[in-house]
Figure 1 (cartoon, helix red, strand yellow):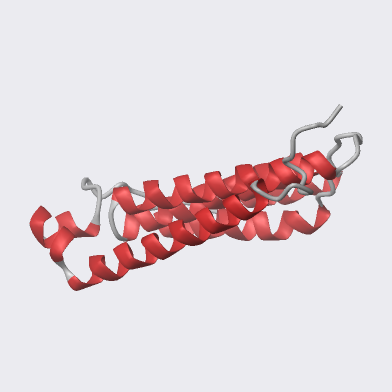
Figure 2: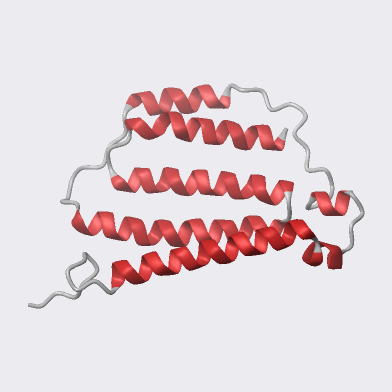
Length: 157
């Protein structure tokens, strides 16, 4: 049921996102969805996978919204009443049977040793995926920050 709650949270964020117009509220919603995805990953695989995934999401979002906010003019910040109705409808879903399960991952539930977690074939694919994802994030951040005409340039006044 915990994964169902995470999926409801992702569904709510997907429904609310088209109604948002300000980058601050969009950024908050993206952080909320990243948190939900990371929680579901830590529930399915291991807690460190969800933690590293959340750090990757938040780091990428910080760079992206620093860029967006620096080029956007000042504007008012407001909420649409429809957002509150969608949020209230989300809270009406029943969450019966949500339980922690007593252990932090499926590996512990299946009785696997910690050494099998780091040496297993599935974890090698996850390591490779995280390395590629970190490298792509590094390339994007360097290309945005090192451009002399980009939005993160120093002021010449």
